[in-house]
Amino acid sequence: MEKIKKLLIQYQVAILYLIFGVLTTIVNIVVFALCYKIWHVDYSFSYVAAWFWSVLFAYLTNRKWVFHSTATNVKSVINEIWQFIVARIVTALLGYAILSFGVVVLKQDAQIWNVIQNIFVIVTNFVLSKLVIFKKKA
Image (cartoon, rainbow, N blue to C red; front, side, top):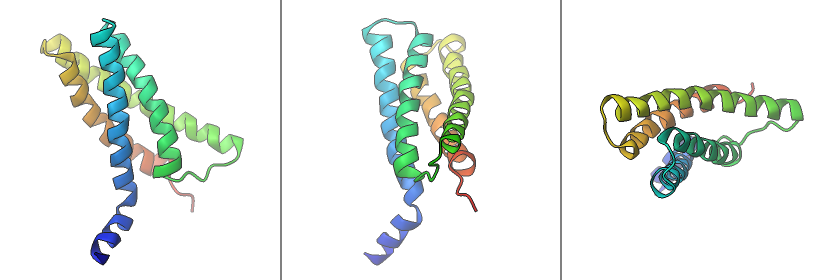
């Protein structure tokens, strides 16, 4: 039991990121499905709507529970939000390219390719968040 506790502490950030990453992905997939399948909105707009709501959810959960942000003054919080959004825009563009490749080039189901691009985006966002955005100050 002590070994398990030690591992949980050692990998706490990765475990929490994975948990909230799964929840963020669920937010993304649900919003995408609502827009695309239920409301019959174009897949491009559905992607943007899903991206917006999942990024908002991800920032709030990552800041508080995953990386325990220490940014408290207005300047550092704005800088943190700015870096988070820019990183998410870059990964969103890459994710959109993956989604479009699957839908337009391969002519496959948009929901399947949305899941595929989400996996890529989650891994890339973790690296950017850990090494750049929420990096612990020395």
